[in-house]
Amino acid sequence: MEGHRVKVPEPVVVDVRHVGDASPTGFASPALASEDGVVEIAELPSGINLCHEAFGDPGDPVVLLMHGLGSQLLLWEEGFCDGLGAEGFRVVRYDHRDSGCSTILEEGSAYTLSDQVADAVGLLDHLGVPDAHVVGLSMGGMIAQTFAVEQPGRCRSMVSMASNTGNRDFGRPSGTALEAMMAPAPSDPAAAIDKELSDRRIWASIWHDDEHARAIFGAYAARSVQPRHAFDRQVSAVLAYGDREDDLATITVPTTVIHGTADTLIAPSGGERTAAVIPGADLVMVEGWGHDMAPGAWPQLINAIATHCHRADGGD
Image (cartoon, rainbow, N blue to C red; front, side, top):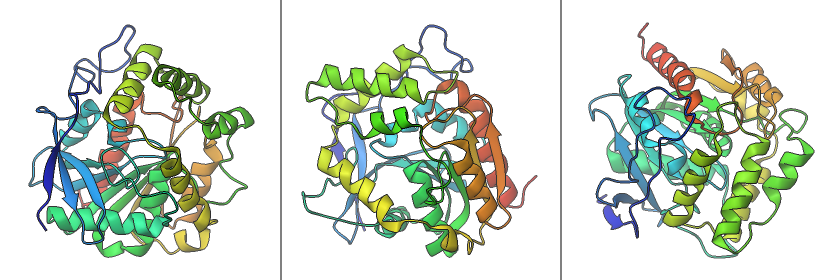
């Protein structure tokens, strides 16, 4: 099915060099959400439109990146995507339904993690990709897990990052983190960014930098503001599935679980439990990583993802 391209209202800086940057040289240079301010839209048979962008050699195996709750494809900054692409992958990032420049449903709508998996399959179909390494963070990790359960033939491998199994005994947020996450954002754009920054500090990595984080949140707001009802639907999709452990125990695709020791939004036990439940899963604990994608963590995250995907493809 043919997709189309839509104009982003303003070119948006999604990755900036900042004072005290802990990331490797060249990994955080200024970049637009799309070089010409235009992004690809996949029109799915379901009626859902998904905004997406790709990096790397079209002939390389695809890594499909799934962002988390309340986020956008900008979570996966261009420097990160380019770094992962340099490891020999075609990297695709996209906005989930109810996020970014993808379809925002009407109030009163509802869907499940399985519906979000169907969106991802539809995107692969649109791109003519038979299968992909599926990588998800937080809510995206839950979607990636469900993808591996429901679509093993389309899943070369799976990486679950900063996520959990739905078992509420594991990966519980701190009280402060939960309160901050669920508090409504102010209607004033500047105040909303201030709240995002305040929240981020609660679950940030040791590489967190206020200037960089503020620039990212500003890019989110300039590109697309998520309505509260859309955020609430994403929460409901996660909660509706509940404890996924019985299903996760049926996963047969190669799996790596990555979690940070500094994550207070989904505690490290969430990742540890995920790796314990999924047969044969590897666990990578990243010292000092929180619940974010701070550039200082990129080298370790890229290495863990690339090593896993190459191994799954039969490489060293």
